[in-house]
Length: 162
Image 1 (cartoon, rainbow, N blue to C red):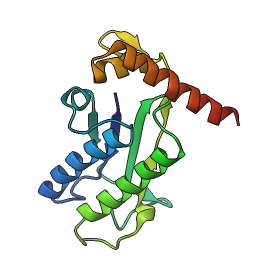
Image 2: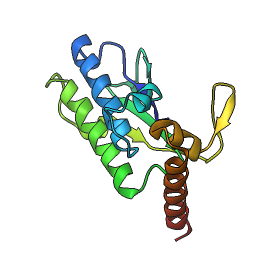
Image 3: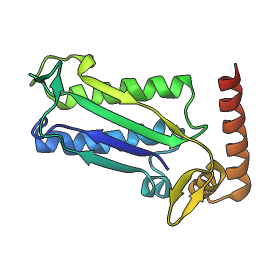
Image 4: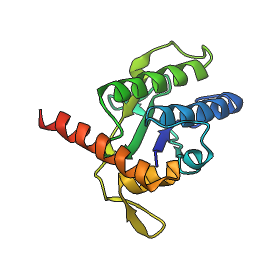
């Protein structure tokens, strides 16, 4: 159940470029959560919310070039160091590509946050879900979903403990 909050300033991108960017970011989100972007069940729970700031200020003054902020939230266990780094890099490159040279290609204008939602606190459809619930939905197999969740959460919690 990946979610992406995309803060894209008004008129920062050409409409067609933005549409292509949002489609690409959906795939990036799914891939870096460890899922198959062609899986229709996974795609159905990959949501992207676009926020439209009228202006962004840097050092108390209106920014001279667009600034972007992305918050890619996934259930606990879905990120590891490699997936997190890949997410940040892929989003940054996709945004700068979408500008089509309208501004200097400066990656410091793109900020990406990659929080994990603690297991069992992801709420949807009037209830909470665990990683096992979500993996079961994505795979259609409760046993496979449970095994996947156990493995990912054990890896994540072990890494955090170190």
